Image (cartoon, rainbow, N blue to C red; front, side, top):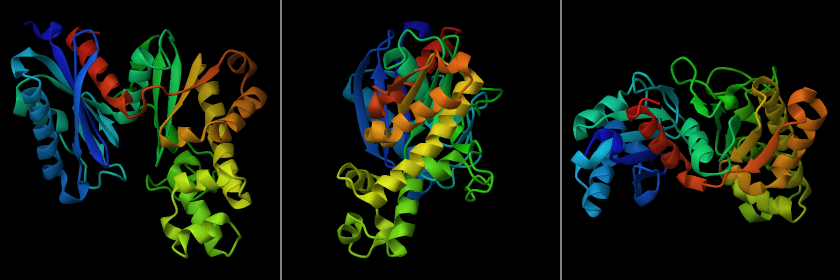
Amino acid sequence: MPRQTGQVVAVDIGGTKILAALFSPGGKMLANLAGPTLPGEGVSAVIDRLCATISALLHGNNVTVARIAGIGLACAGGIDTPRGLVVTPSPNLPGWASVPLADIVQEKFGVPAFLLNDASAAALGEHRHGAGRGVKDLVLLAVGTGIGGGIIIGGKLYLGAVGGAGEFGHMTVAADGPLCGCGNTGCLEMLASGRAVERDAAARLRRGENSVLREMMKGDFDSVTAVQVGEAARVGDPLACDVIARAAYFLGVGMVNAVNIFNPELVVIGGGMAALGDMLVAPGRRMVAERAFSVSAGLVRFATAELGNEAGVYGAAAFVRDRVRGG
């Protein structure tokens, strides 16, 4: 079977789990298999588990490597796509610096392997199979523990010069804001992500502010989660509502910037924080209408991501198909 018409394996490497999926040449998911990442055991151990998960997926579906067109790898962190290199780590994958992941996987399986940032993969997945079907120009904001993003221009994934495009989480939205792990201050990720919500809520609880979260956490304020803050906000807890509103404000600033810069038809909001719905996103939509350049604000639509945790593997598979077919 020619490589160009073979099946595709795609893998999304997250801080908690490794999700591998087998796709038909036409992009249909045929099977998937998940395993634990356990990043604390080190880079080599995670790569061994990644390769073992791919092998188990193939074996469990009676697929030989000879039938595989390529392997797509979606990974958080700073990615140099042409070199297949994880340049800088993400908070969930400590120590992943200067890791030639694509070369390692390609050598192991003997088929082409391609690496891209996980949020860029999610954007491509949503464009081909999710909320962005039929849209030529879109931006995806992946709002979870951190904030990532992806860009589709003219129906194609835009990666920038080496794969670093779409780092919306590291745009400056408050010049005098908190120091980010990237070295910048006032990054969107530090003010609108799940981690930002948790940090803000914990600080206010330690200051003695009243909240239903105070009883819920029983004094262990640093363990409060964004999910818990969201639950408290849904029942009208003033502290939780205020914390979410602050994150929504800064997310709105980021949305205005993205709309002004890229003039997309569609902004897709994904990631775990998207579960907050209008509580998080509606202020940003209003801000875009009020503040964005009118020619862009009048066109753009907003949608919630449809593919959930599978967006990354759908996108990584599409990336492989584009590459082996010369797209």
